[in-house]
Length: 451
Image 1: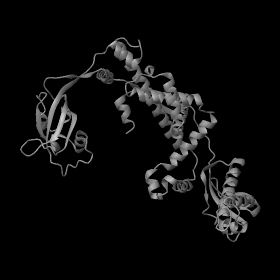
Image 2 (image 1 turned 135 degrees about the vertical axis):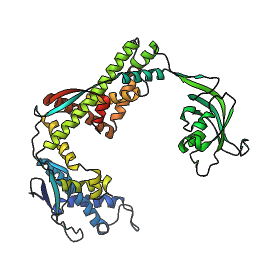
Image 3 (image 1 turned 90 degrees about the horizontal axis):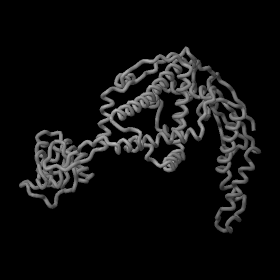
């Protein structure tokens, strides 16, 4: 076997691999013997067919398979042993033609194109000037959050008569032209919010009603098609063909009433004995907003540093090769270059940033430990529970641990979590090295920076 590397330029190379029969012959013979042991050939006992017959039938496809295995191993062993820093994966060469005939030849020469990683330095120091936005929660933010806790503690209370905020429980059913129930029509036990009705005339029909009242209405004027399907429990409902004459008979009427902010509520959402009154609640909400906003501010620092470092990057990338490589990936197999350019308009910048990011990680010995992965997974799990009103203190430690480990057992989730921790460490490095100028800003104006 002979392997040579010909560097076309600083970013592109061709790998030439020559295989002799001795490089793959043993593997081919082993595969043929295995086929013979498992072959059921008419006229012979299982595993006793003549080897000559097996070779005539299977030699060439087996040779192709084993040569490809030897070739692939040799190629990647060469790149690893010679510490070749490359991008993507080697591709069959378009510069040199590979001609292979497994039926006639014993020796083969293969050519591969290779993208070489560029050599460069990254200037991450105080010459990089960035704005660190200090986002202050507004009174409106605090008040909305206070209301959300009152809503979470609230409940529906029965009412004698309905108004525009009422929840009605009962039965909806189709009626005939004379207003009597159509026993063969659509019907369902369900509930509905009067406030969801947009048509004012139709909404008025549902206001001031009592339990036992029947309200006749036009289905198409009261509900959107998706809502009507849910209301009737009928996914096949078609607004184009359905008779819209319906009635709703009320069984129960209730209105939602916000709850009081009691110690029980505070303990449920913030942990036992952490918050005791509305002033402390406001302070805790403010702290949570500041913590959340700090993460968003750090994210802006990160992407601004990314943009600045990428624009300042004084190196080229093998863009045409990388496009060709991407179009060879399974997920893009049906794409052409035009579609690739449309979906990845900043492909060159993305490749450069990936190289810069990897260099920063390597040069600064940034690593992610198993404990850090687990801690990050726990944060994500707790955040998901929090969206359903479950405070971290309410999650048993063993359950949190098990759920987080299950998340990490999935490669896609684990890679995402590792990237999150890596980016957090990179952000901390950027904040340490760069020159930061703080600027106070409202959350509304901060959001406009991303438009």
